[in-house]
Length: 117
Image: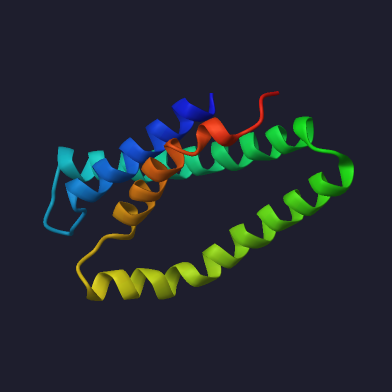
């Protein structure tokens, strides 16, 4: 399940990067960009929920509480810093979704290190 989630997330983020959403697109292409944006948000919400359930099933209570608190903290921190990173990558002509897609590809190779449930 985690493998599929990471592969789909990487594919959607990299596809979103290669489409290069700009204002110049109209019609069907603009609809594809809109659908990709929605799919990215659904995948991220699904991933957060799956990670929460995975940690609840696998780890003892003290570690679980720390992990869920840290997950919530990092999620909020990433949202607060996303504007800064977006501006940083835009100035260098790199779309942030490309970086996230590459990170998902890197995560794919770390999946065997996860514990089995």
